Length: 240
Image (cartoon, rainbow, N blue to C red):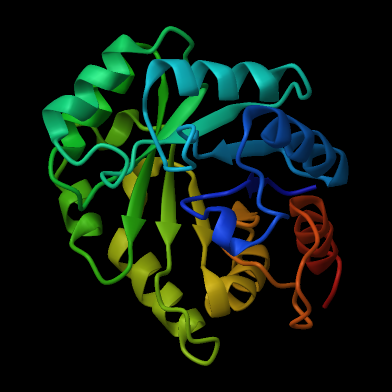
């Protein structure tokens, strides 16, 4: 089976429904069934007690420990600026982590991305270079001295219109080019999630799916779990 990452929760919260896992225990449960459904990697946003994304060492450790107690695949976390807006504070958080993820995503268009990526690499954590459509992330990455050292590129299509998301994905892939020889994971979000996922499978690229990217199945019905979304993604790879 091709590489399918499951993105368990993203920046979503309780207002997005009970199916979105937030606590470490819920995230561990969700990861277990998603991996059983075919996910080969996990991406997660650790949460504070009030349900907000956080990079605090306590939350990161609790989340990683809970997930790793249930699955044996690599587990990564976000370093999004919304979780810690000040770049220097973001770097300090990473240096304070007591339990390390296998990898962490770094959005290359965000201020301080190079310093954040360097801090992760210094600690032996793989870097997923997040290159969003509609930003200068691809151009910044192309000029980055760290580009050849990242684990993979996350090509994120922010166009949520199902009618245009595939075209936006093609434009983003053109902008990324050879990605300095690094593997590319292509994914979309909301209305663009399934069209972009199908494109990724058709191109033979890694992809991802989960409640971070979409709350609905390809037929438009509400998903009841991350595992159900993964199952649909796996099926998409066997369909013409």
